[in-house]
Length: 438
Image (tube, rainbow, N blue to C red; front, side, top):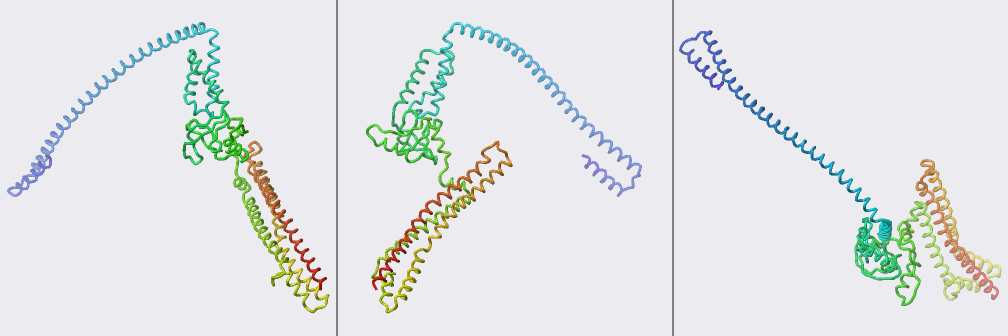
């Protein structure tokens, strides 16, 4: 609107200038009048908009006042309701106390009976949570929890507890086989035959199981006891009469210790790098001793073979056949014996070296382990034995490995040295016989 008026003024002024020249006072008065009209028009617009906003605000204020009054009324109603509930709660507490007193009077000596019933139900539930017979009595935990949570028991509750104890007694005196789910160490779930020995153990294919009631299955132990224990299970399964069988009288505690029992590789790993070096020396020493034993078996055959041109006996006979003096023949014989005996004795000292160095490395590992133990004591004190267990374990494991490796290597060295000495002695006796015959 303002743009239109300004354009009209400019056009009119231009048109007027073309016809006749208007005085400047008149032009100024016209501009002021035009501006005044624009201000009046805008004032009317703004006043109407302000009135609309004011009416809207007044309306919102009345709505807020109404909401506030509703909230106050609701608060007052809730306060009255709260007061009524408090009075009802106090009255109920008073009534409940009176009823409990009346119940105690009526129960009399039976209260002790109910208390003992709850106690025995709790004890049986605690003992049967991880029991090997859980698969046969799946409803027993719920029954015992129901009996243990009641204050007043009826005849049915007493009979349920009585039957549960009888089932436990019967299960403890029988060996029973049944089909059940079995969880393998890798997490696989299979179905197989489980044999239960009383309330002590459950086995599957001569392997001990651990009951896992949360999984509704038996869990196969990752680490099994020694073979002499599992062998009794196999013998008992095959027998048709009475047989002794190994059981865990602690109902799984001793078997659970086998889960933390380290294997041979884990024990060697406790010795760290020194332990692996000792094992490598032992394996290399045993391989070298086996090779040396193979060579001595070949030498034993050579000293008895007189037909082969490569045998030492054939060479001795060829020396005797030569036309030489007795002293020359003896010298040649001694030279042959010395050369052959050096070949026979070769490698024995290396086996002796391996047998000697293994316990020395074990002693080195012991010293390193004790140093780590004292460092742990210096840093953490003696309050936590686990901080010292690593160093002590390394010290003991390396010593054990050194002795284990040294003992068979020393035995091999003794046997091979005796075998070499017997071969050389036989060769010397053979040489003396050949010389005396010439």
